[in-house]
Image (tube, rainbow, N blue to C red; front, side, top):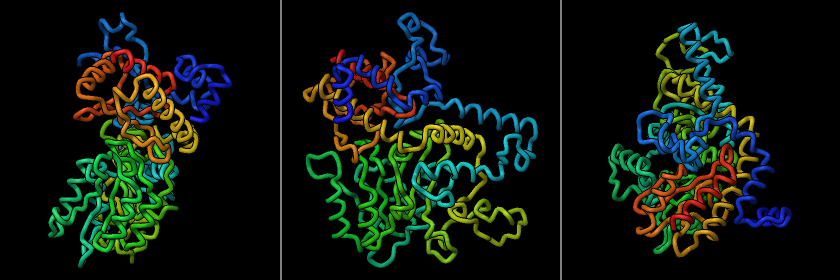
Length: 458
């Protein structure tokens, strides 16, 4: 807010004016990145099924204008590069068939595709390239990581998650406990906010670890909590948990491509994330994971316990078909099956855009401004009597997303008005609307328009 207020004084514009949003967009060093994405029109996102062109009455009401897309926390927009790379792979398949595995017109031999993806992904999560793998989707990877890292012994049998963890994480923890003969009622430990509070206090998590750490085998929290938008203090929690002898893994579904992460330096044991939210790989896009380099050696416990497949075998001898497993270097040894090229191609196209944007540093700087601007406008133009922001106000405790809770009498009206106006957010029952301005393609004008629609309907 200090930065925004200083610019308002410099320009002589009020923070609540649309002209201020336009001035911020004009000076945005990342403004050209928006042109790297396909932007749906109002007509397209308000169409009732059928044609994606959205032709109809909404065109007459300005429906050919770009929509206001603030839903990157659920599905990122399509990078134009993703279509280009996928089309190139389709052409390779059509023109060379199986030969494309080894000889590729663009130098992207399919046999080594995962390596290029890992090289571009690693900077986004603060990892070494050999600590990143690409395979499957998020929950499958969670299970594969827990197969390697969750080994209940003696008193140490629990998996710690948030009480309101995303259902897949909750189900995965419960089923892993059952798989090992435990009881989810006692062996899945839930970290719960204080009565009357929406988010978890870091000090409470640390106290829980101090009190019960010797009974916890794995700590698996979310980097950013999907419902509240709270970003956890990952380095402090990781260090505290490991000091108690716990293994630490993170679900980064809402953090990867959103926060500035340093998984290697923080000493995280493992992490998993999807790539279709802030990393824009497309619906159901391929998942990714991290395994710290200290777990790569053949003698490491996780390496001994991992589930293996042909694709985790050393690339140099993979096709000798000896049935004697020789682990690949690093996280690649934890991969199980052949990289699916078309989903990986869409991801690769998006990662190229991140590289052109300069990585997470400049993106995070813009994100903090965008989200602060959204918070200011909601508080000033809508007001706390009509809504409540449950996401922490501290920028270090949130990413791009603000979760806004309305009274039940307002909730349906607000969401319907946003949808009708071509403002794309998402709802979480019973009365929460999640709004996420993404720095790669969202503008300050997008934020202003979203709040203006909410203000008008109320």
